[in-house]
Length: 78
Image 1 (cartoon, rainbow, N blue to C red):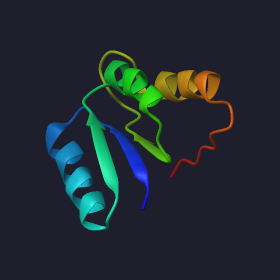
Image 2: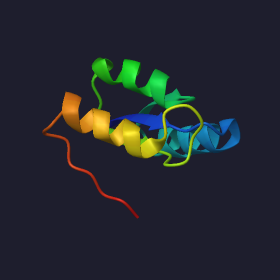
Image 3: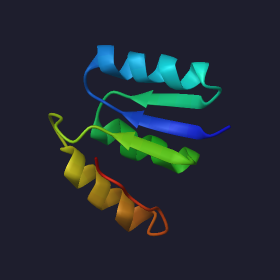
Image 4: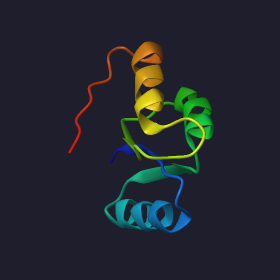
């Protein structure tokens, strides 16, 4: 299955997403903020799930930086 990075500042939401995705057979890494998420990005992921409203580096800035680091990634918002 996929290797997924979840960037989410709310621990309850981060853990819930992690459990749900792991039960579906995915390998999940949870990052509690944008700074940690950007550092962990180098570990290689198939998918990044990122909260948009976070303290520190907001989600929009995290996505902008990911686009710079990994220009081949595609993005969807919903």
